[in-house]
Image (cartoon, rainbow, N blue to C red; front, side, top):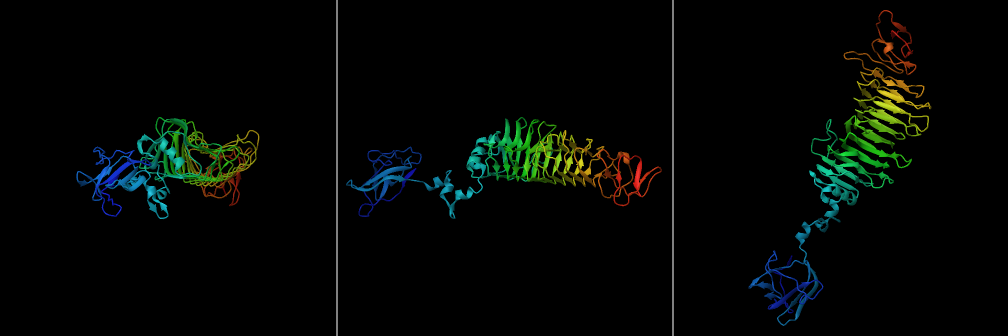
Length: 510
């Protein structure tokens, strides 16, 4: 620490001080009786004996002006003239070096930025690097992330890099976590072989991200632009496991749990209070094929998913009260089903599935499980304008009925069903009433045969009625054909619709 660098000293008359003395000592002590070690070099190797000589107004050493150093930042000093008269005394002089302080960890707080400081401005979006994190795919960043969650005042940036952490991080309420990635998984078996903000969980644990208090809702937060992954040998039950999620946004996220027993995302109620007003936009989750956990397990009410993809494990399961909307999503490769709608509520469960795909499932595309219903005689999934491609399965939609209750509700309209299904659905309409209409079935390769279930009209070729599903009860089949073969079964029904049940042979509308 520099004490005086060619500083000027004057006498009581204002002239340059000659034959003066300078004493430097412990702060708030008499420097003549409590001197500090002083030196003539920054390395503190050349001792400067006290009192230090002053000539011509400057400290001198061997007849030349000298710079004086001491290890103490705060010290006392006294200046005397040649007659030992005190010229000056300071009990605690702060010898701060501005450049040293600015280069230190608190330097940004010393610089003004309008009505705030630079430190305040930087805190608008603090970076996890400020807490010592390193995205080098080697450093354990667990403590850095946890400290940042506690101190970052509601928002944190994760720059591009691979950040290794251990599971069990506590995600706080009202917190916004932002990365610099766009989109999520890039292909089968990987959630990002490209530069991204990637958080990688290692070791074993119940959840990568959770909350400290499961009795308090996790509200008004968000995550965006991040990829969450697990190391190949990690055994983590859930990448994220939250209670009481409320008004939470997840966007442009990728999640992959590589453990056969692990899922990606779960949210649960606190008591009987559902999780409300949550959105999932461009979220991609992936668990191993034939994994033993659901990859996406939610009970959100008044919530929705848009342009997202949920892949693998036992499939995705929805347990909520209803008012859940899926638009343009892909539900695929589920072991039990691509999507399970589980009636675990007394409420009507309005669920809107529109323009989504149910692809390559190891079970049906959609399983509607009414067997777990605690009561309530209405459950209303609206399945409109979706496509199914489950060539290995017998059914695209299966309803598991309640043991005793007849449950009302449901619309299945305008869907395109799988090539390989012998029947598009398995539904006992004496247990679950469903409205059907204008659904289609694409036949074998190079054929333009369709099955039309429900009321309406469609121009298609004649088809064996025996091939058409009739177990669902009376369903309207519409065929406007212009040719027939001998022994056709001709059904006259006008141009609108024809009700057909348990018919055989070849038939057409006249």
